[in-house]
Image (cartoon, rainbow, N blue to C red; front, side, top):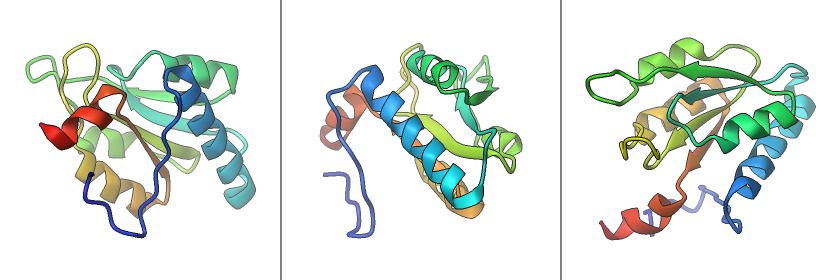
Length: 134
């Protein structure tokens, strides 16, 4: 429905905090095993759903929070890129975010995740169902 290629994967859960908890746990375990990252962090916008903060707190994952531009209510890829470091396990994107309904620059963030070999979590919630039809 989102024009993915056979190499792309995704997962749908029952929703809510479960999706985020499982994603953060999978990223944390993967990057510990593959890179030995024992002090992981995630890069996310201040507009990301609050369950990311809860998942990070429960799983001892540092958060690098990127502030939105107060005029456009969006983030730029450059802001996210500046926050990535050797302990980053995942970049978080919202499609859309709850406070303003804006959509993060998914294509640029995907390229960035590939460039730095980190995970990319796209928090779709309703957006994952609605966007293919909008």
